[in-house]
Image 1 (cartoon, each protein chain N blue to C red):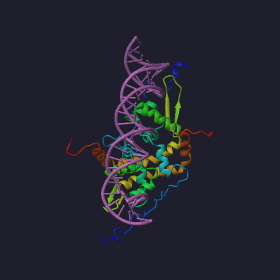
Image 2 (cartoon, each protein chain N blue to C red):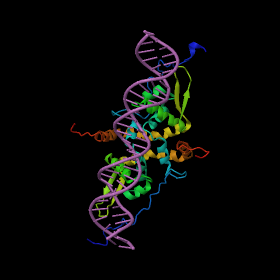
Image 3 (cartoon, rainbow over the protein chains, first blue to last red):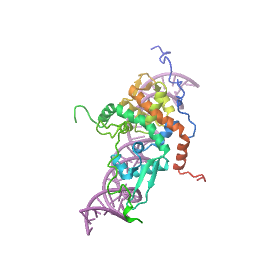
Image 4 (cartoon, chains in turn red, cyan, purple, brown):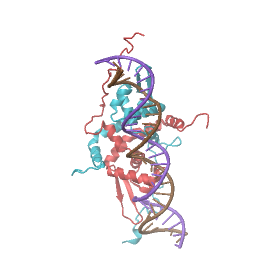
Length: 148
Length: 148
DNA sequence: TGGGGCACTTACCAAATGGTGCATACTTGT
DNA sequence: ACAAGTATGCACCATTTGGTAAGTGCCCCA
């Protein structure tokens, strides 16, 4: 067993790479974030936020009800909650017309709009690879080609 | 005042827009997804997945330990878990060298690489707007200028 | 007068998510 | 012998997240 060359290179006792550098386009400037992606992810954390941003980016301001119909499967509670957070984070603007049957609409702030644009490639990716993606989910949901 | 024109246009009893169309770049083809973005989001759902993909995209294959040091604050359990899912989803490839002190490394599959590229704009966005973002988090974490 | 819509709000609950710590099997260094 | 490192597995627990269902005040319509 060639005892002195079992680990030909990169022997585990001496880490080959101390720590990968998180750089290209990622300059850790502010504290708390390891990189820009980290920062972004924390802002859009929440099941519905990216979707909301994206829908809002498609059409002009949407009324609450429209939005809820657009983002299918979202409950009132969730939609409101995420909208509030997005508003607090300065990504969406809420306009309350103070009318008597309530009328409110939501639109993107410039910041929100810029973020929504960064989301576009993700959308395209999903569209392009939807076949693979749905295949993946098919088996995730406990499902085999042979039925059952 | 002006009782008959309170709802000048788009009176609430008659929805102005029946349902916003989720189209530009989003063609709902396969069942289950409202649009491409939806599909993508489900694949990268999980606190660390985008980060893992992104790190993997930066350097070549990473050994498990390197990855964990790179993605700071991630626990073993989480990292392993997410790596397994990514592997199952065909985004990363795991190579086990079957050596005696365990040696394993992870790299992106072509699919994973393409997804990682779609993540780039998010990273740039985060980097560009990191100031705003960290301001947002400052107040989210219950924080006032006047301390405590 | 009753039903429905609007935009929310609240209470309660289940499930997902994530963290800590211990265990494994084996090696190398001291 | 013992600590440390390698890549994981697993049990247990706390927190977070998300969902359901109900209620609110006010209006319009039949």
